[in-house]
Amino acid sequence: MTAVRRLDAAGSRDCRRRLAELLIDSVEAGASVGFMPPLTEEAAVEYWEEVSDSIDAGHTILLVAGDPIAGTVQLQLPAYPNGRHRGMVAKLLVHTSARRRGIGTELMSALEEEAARDGRTLLFLDTQTGSDAEPFYDRLGWERAGIIPDFAYAPDGKVWPSTFFFKRLNHAG
Image (cartoon, rainbow, N blue to C red; front, side, top):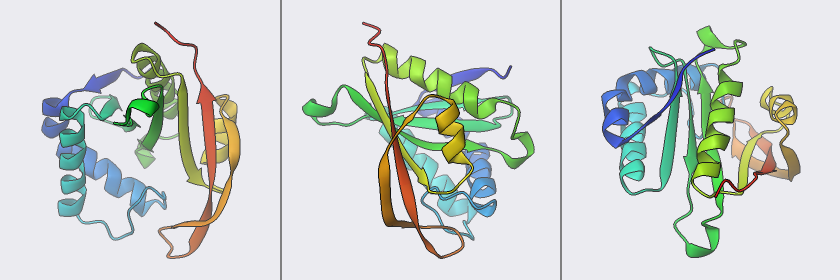
């Protein structure tokens, strides 16, 4: 079992180089996570600076697993009053050298616990249709909401559909 911990903005800034390495590794391995290869270290570090700012603003919860960090996931929190009950899961990343060890499952379980503690009762996410992530989310009890065609460019430069998932949580408050 890998220790999962929540990072505050200062902690995420302290870890930004390792988080950048993790993001670059994931993009190079073909993950469709918003970036196209080649992803430079400068661009990856800049992204994690933006995440730190979002944590400071109260719009993001960042979890990491391992020491050194082998995986991460974010819960993005809507700023609008009508969305205080939901959260969007973003950037579930596990380093290629640490995959198939349960780290992704541990991160998602911890994320659901954090979300429930924060009063979130509905989570949603999207993933590239046909990717290994689809059966992963199925196994974790996520429900498919639907598929949007031509949603995003994959690292190979092709436009792929995305499958949207949601999960209802028991309110912890």
